[in-house]
Image 1 (tube, chains in turn blue, cyan, brown, red):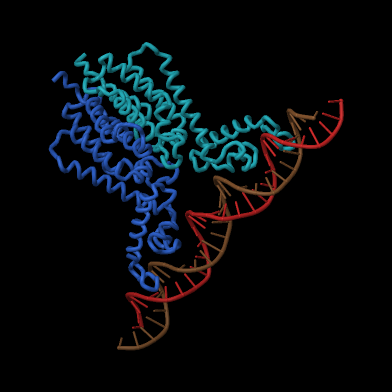
Image 2: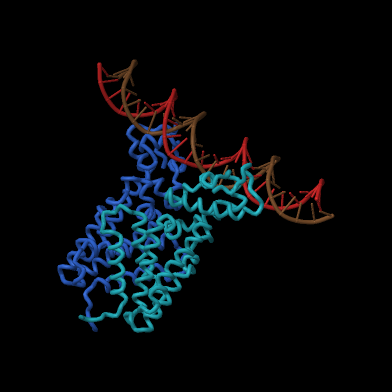
Length: 215
Length: 215
DNA sequence: TGTACATCAGTGAACGCGCGTTCACTGATGTAC
DNA sequence: TGTACATCAGTGAACGCGCGTTCACTGATGTAC
């Protein structure tokens, strides 16, 4: 798996391969150790089978490496949410919102350390890199806003709810709450996280939806 | 403010005072730097006006010091939530749940770094200290369960909601979502956090409450 | 077709840093006789 | 009432550690003449 020749020297043109190896190693390390702090340049280099300074041929510094790892994760998350929605294109906006929330949560629960860095980390730690707007422009959020707008247009929501952005933020915050709590406190004496997620989504749908009366 | 004599030696019996100073300094540092990592033994000692080794007269290691800081914060949070509820003892359970949620959120938003450590930190970082059950036995949560039970007994909730623990977890997760998102991403391009909180609480109440029909 | 050369991806050693923690100690304090 | 002594809360120096990063370098590769 080493991109090196027997002599230990890299061959010209193989820089991109090594770069990929570095990102892969950093990601694996992040998942394995469960902490951004443990993903050291030295550890990454070790895992790639290369010396630490060679990392700097590919990334200006550690922050950019970590960013690259997370950046890809953002994209992957957006892809997954979109893929999930593509499977039921003609469901009602409310059902699609629920599906998007579930896909989002599944991703976060399956990649807790990525989720931690993406959504639970210090904003100051990496200014202007994977901060704020990045989160919102990752595609998934705009989609939720669109779905909220569709739901409003279809008269599916309580009449007080007129701002699709606010509806999207409410849903995002609540689902994020379930995920982030599960990520931070995996051993909480509580019902299974899937059940909690279902319950939260039920309550949210009931809370934003127009009351159906007795049925 | 120094507990030391002119000679720089501590006087017998003043150990407790210094211990308090250490905790206060650690807490101030936590708030000032905004990161647990920056609360080093050296920095705390500096702030107290004492040398690093003397910290170890009062705490076995750093983890115990940080724990002490957070432990007090848990207690303070529970006090604040309880105090808030005491101001309107005869409100309906639903109103009280909303008030508890608001008090909880206000505390978290006012003490973001404490909140981060208490509810957003790594579970492994401090095993068995301020983890898991500690969160739930902090008093506030049991209270929310009680209120949920009262709401159920009073027939205020949707009939599907029979488990007060689950209701409490749903409410907690959703409110936590707003707080933790605001703590992690304070500069998010989004409506003001107070408005988001209000919106989430509105949706939650509408979502758990028995539909009132048209009014 | 052969050779000089620029390039490129690595190496190995070292830098300075701040950290948690340990060690042997000191000197003021209160107490027992 | 005076003095020896245990206690207690500090000090100052140092430990080993792992970190991000920099430096001067090497040697295989592909290319231009």
